[in-house]
Length: 180
Image 1: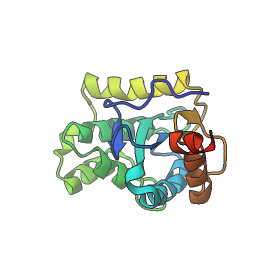
Image 2: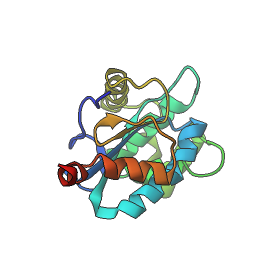
Image 3: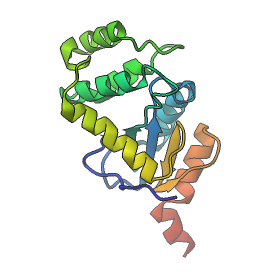
Image 4: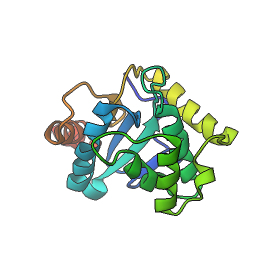
């Protein structure tokens, strides 16, 4: 199933828009599988370097994870201060999620964001951003987290460094051109 919408400047990106390879994750900060995928994505990014652009989109499964939505809102609040990726790293740090309001405030302070910017009540803009990501996931066929899209198509393989790198490189425009 294709990614809708495709990666754009509205996404939270690591790497350069228009890079040869694109990896998108729909994630939930309280999801144990997303937490396990975090170091995998970091290693994929390290291995592929400038060839890869990585985008993270929110897909909080609030019915299963009671703190997922507040964590997503906190990440977006931090984004307003240019600190999305710093908050993303804090939210996935440690073995167990620590996502209560006091934790979110502490993370904000640690990354230099005023704590009131990341905790309830959030601005409507921040909530709208999380909802827009979630809705794009629904339109793209996302059913759970983490869900990855490799070069614009839903990925169904194992979430390992080797498998993701192989999928990215085998479906890149450059690899398609070489085989033509």
